[in-house]
Length: 500
Image: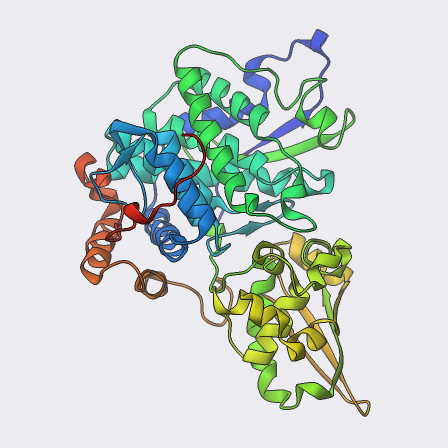
């Protein structure tokens, strides 16, 4: 059986004198994907619902954390009619769409607990949902419109992540998010290809930032980075709809992104995009998290839980060597060269990007929790610190090949024991991965929401939100406007500060 037809779009740097026609630019090709009115297939619509629920789950768990509360306060300072809902606030409390997107995106991203896609570049494509939902609510779009928009945004971000490596050049992955949000909004609002082309160019131009947001002592900006990209993309679409234009060709120009931020003037990229009339199904290639930690740690948390039974006396552990891919070793492992990844006083954002810390805690506890596994007391426990500093990662070319092929995001663990014995085990993918031991389906997404929302969101409100979310493709505009959840008294507990 043949697979879907794709367009192999070649991207290379062009001199200004070449005057590359718009129709040959990557931004135009992405805009054509956005404006192709192909229907959304059933499995894609089902997965859009799953990821909406997933985003809401992790947002609910983060509502009382300071970065989320501050983003919410900023949004509340920008009321609008009809406006967009803010997670946790009453449904009658509405903000302008760009600020609602900002607040909700920070909430979704704060715990590093939602979906992921790993290829040449990293992606958290669930970051697309809050801005698309916010604009759908403000502009009166239906659930069907929103499903189509989400399918487009996932398609664009995943296709870019498959082809265009950002992290080797220390560019943050949100540089792919700005264009994907702009493309999704093009679908949502029924814009012309020319308008979406300009919006994508502006969104890319204004959302390229360095990876220092995820390096060294990682700050709270890690949660804000995708929210900023989403907010900027909304503003870019608004400007494009008013007739404003973008620097172009934004990817291919001799002073553009490829020439100066990526592989340089001699580079050639091949971006595979669905041909006209082909379904946008990239969301089906993505996967969510069972654990609140950077995705490349997911499989190792599962492996540590299994190893715990084989290692009754952790004081006998002399060393732990994790053989894994280049990406895992260099981003969350010892290959990063970040001493902060071994610092008991490190920030939560740093610890959730430290595989040595994560593996040590999971091995000691035989479990993982989005809050208790990261407390300062937990990170400073003497036995944990001792075990943590015995863990190192090494790059293994075979795991790198499997990673780049999309086959494996794990590795092999070798535990050396006092007296000369060793315990070895490997894992290819996390248990919750589609190819894992316990793949996530609708019931797991619902359970994740109920578990994470229960401490704050009343049961009746949980049930109301989940009923709407599961009926997303058939919702009318007024029901889409109610697609949020509220927490009694949360808005009144939002802290003061700033000058808005």
